Length: 356
Image 1: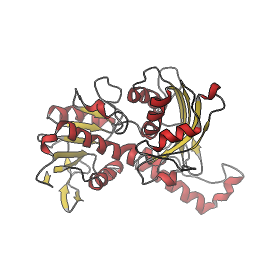
Image 2: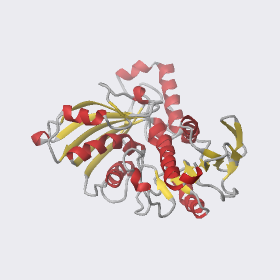
Image 3: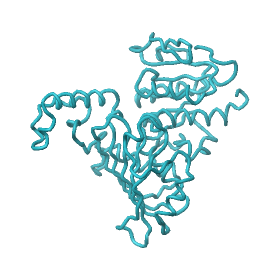
Image 4: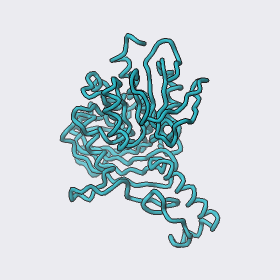
């Protein structure tokens, strides 16, 4: 534990050396989070590494042997298995846990929160655990919430185009290695045949991802639906965050050969008529939303907002009660690290005001 300031909250980051953990450390700095004491934790494999934060050298601790006392807020980005074991232990030791995995999202007694959408759900935290939504859900919530409040959201159809960084470093490395192989062999050969390049065997994404799209993310759920768990996350999490338990929603998740920033094609049906002009007026004042004409992954990468564009009336819905639009958002930043830090800020204000 390293003291950063005289006042503030004691913060621990579990998974500090990982891809999202790196962004999380950066975001804590950028947002001037009120840190008093700061600790970085990880598995035994990463323990002993020294990470610098605001001029302070902090040695990464092995979570398995660490003393968990004295932590006010712990931010987790270490996977569902790790969270299942350690989140209750941190909470029992007195910390509020902000968890970035899927482990706790659908537990009734665990708030699932997007900072701009449902912060009041953090007034009470019964188990001491708070869940951070999936990156695709996160991206569209700041867009859907104001539209739902104004026009009444009834049905949602989404196709996601998800970057390889959503699959971790292994996904990034697979794309890099495959792209290099294609360029070395003459990538334009793919114009005439998908088997024209001798790609290395996929190591993370289910199929070759360079110059390709793969409509399979996660695992098939054993309920007869033939949906993946990634696709069901969007429906289930949207219902919980928006407090719309009967929302009809369907999603197809596609991995694409992009490093960072997910894209989502959205068709939303509302209870009441809505025009493009009305939608843009509502979204223009929505927090964490920007309205470019053409939202792209490269536009969103490294930035905070959900970029929404191509807004138009959905011609497949009667009575002008549907909209079609496209959203892009950085899956590592707002889709994971930033929202987790924003939730920690809200928890600090609501539950540690006397320490700030």
